Length: 250
Ligand code: PEP
Image (tube, rainbow, N blue to C red; front, side, top):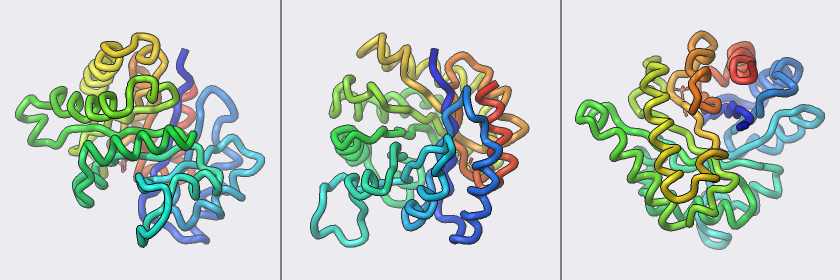
């Protein structure tokens, strides 16, 4: 039995006042059981959010991290810093990191290895572009992105990992994969993991991401292989995010 996870990816949004209000709303209203709730603020606000999560069930995560341990890497943030600030999870390989900042499968794999070695839990994002879906390459692309990490890190490294299937064409566009499209890819991802280890495949949580909102969450999460969501835009509105968490916990 996998406990659902709903993760809010705030991206580069908000300021301290906005975040304080958002957290006040979330803290009182997110379900206390049946679903794990995670927020991933911009890194400069991690400390503020950590304080605001105290006494709540909300866990803290980061949106990205350096693959390096420490040293002369101007502007980067290390895993030990995230750990020091109380982060439990790190989002890795988000499509915006892959497309805007040219992160390769190999770099994502290095970050994944460093994350697991530090004792944090990676949320590995995978997904195809619209052109790749239209060319019927969805499973090939997702398979390549997952294989790159399994081969570099070993399947044991997936023990506490989470995978997020995020079709690039659905992120921030208001277009959502149908429940059938999501289930098809999620089942294929579980099967890919099962080829390395059936126990890990049965246990690993596979989140759907791409324009999840309060209205479509329940039908997406009702699928057997959809174990919650990675939520962008709707995670910035307390009521919507709470409704999504309730849908996952129902
Ligand atoms: C995301 O950024 O991971 C995401 C899924 O965004 P949105 O929910 O806004 O599509």
